[in-house]
Amino acid sequence: MARDGIPLQGLDLNLLVTLRALLREGSVTRAAERLGQSQPTVSRSLATLRQAFGDPLLVRAGRGMVLTPRAESVRIPLERALAAIDGLPTAGGFDPSVDERTFRITLPDLLGAFVVPRLMVGLSSVPGVRLQVLGSERDMMRALLQDEVDLVVAAPQLDHPELYTRRVGEDMEWSLLFGPSYLPGADVDAETWLASEHVVLAPHGRPDVPSMLDDALDRLGRSRTVRLHVGYLSAIGHTLLVAPLVASLPTPAAQALASGLPLTVVPHPLQAQLPPVGIWMTWHEAHHADPGHAWLRDQVAAAFVDAPAAS
Image (cartoon, rainbow, N blue to C red):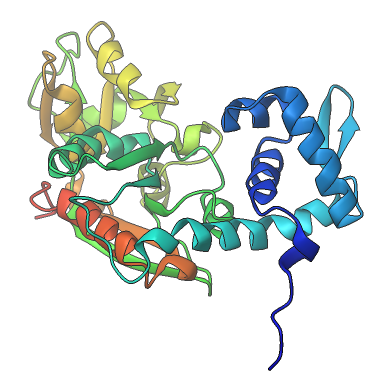
């Protein structure tokens, strides 16, 4: 009978967890903090890993450290291998009422305002399940392919042969959001809206990237005056309380932002000419058959049910 080989020539597999932290953080100090270990302990582990791989793995570059080409080449296989090992305790099934699991979701600020509260209501009876909700400033495609996140919820759809997608909810309509100092009041027609000064949530935190709405206006041969770009949704609500600006947001986000604040939400005057906002979940094929991940996808999809949709 053939004998099974010894993985990695007998290297302690726990060292691979340390290697994952080192490759994610690019720093011995930050990896130690992430692992809850001392810096000397992680430094000794790095020395052992360097000997096992025959490569320095991380090298000095100025005040920081960078990954060597060998380290870059093992990063994705390592993430996937450890993800599979992490899933061994629940292999063959997942019971959210008793199993413990942490899921990492990338969710734009625009959606998080109404999706996260709904998710937490749904998870109130499963104390072992924890969420890490990350912003969309990162490269979402790269985060999925390198197993830095479990699920991306965003628009537009991500397309890659290793990724699965699922549309969630109905297309969302647009609404206007404004405060007491916005002079036109509640009756805002298209020309009044176009002549107004606007506050815009910068896509992925980047004001240089045109928003979905501005792309649509450009196709219509129209434009608007953007007075303020902001990188996070909460700044819009408090700004509208004191400035005569108007914001255009998907209706669920506008309603969530107006909750508890003296802000007005009205249908967008150009609704019929604007593209509806469709939302997709995207995940890597490595997680497709995982019962826990499938359960997570169902929870996220349920959070979009009854969201105000396009008429």
